[in-house]
Length: 164
Image (cartoon, rainbow, N blue to C red):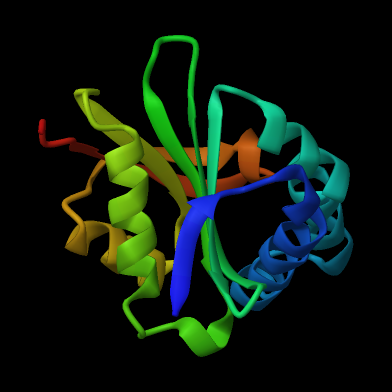
């Protein structure tokens, strides 16, 4: 049985590895190898995961099966009190199992009471865009060169959060 819970600092290595492996699979053909390595190191280091686990403005949820982290999502509040989903990754063998839907629902519950939630997706990640559209997100903006993801083109997606 899979349990979804908030990340703890001792989960940092497993979460770092999950994110890094997912990025390699998803974006390996979109970045030059040194750029991909730099981007992964910047975004997913173990130290960064530990800091994020302790940050009260960040919610990282992990999906755990038999004591192994098989999925994770990260969302955070910005300075304008807007919630942003920054990451949602699963081990490949959990794609299509409904786990991503469960992580999305758990993330939305964590932000209930807010008016909306947003996220960015690198253009060309059609699987992610379709997943977010299935969950009520719509493209609201495009960024030609998004410095937060190594200068790649991105889309901004958002949705309202139901109250209650």
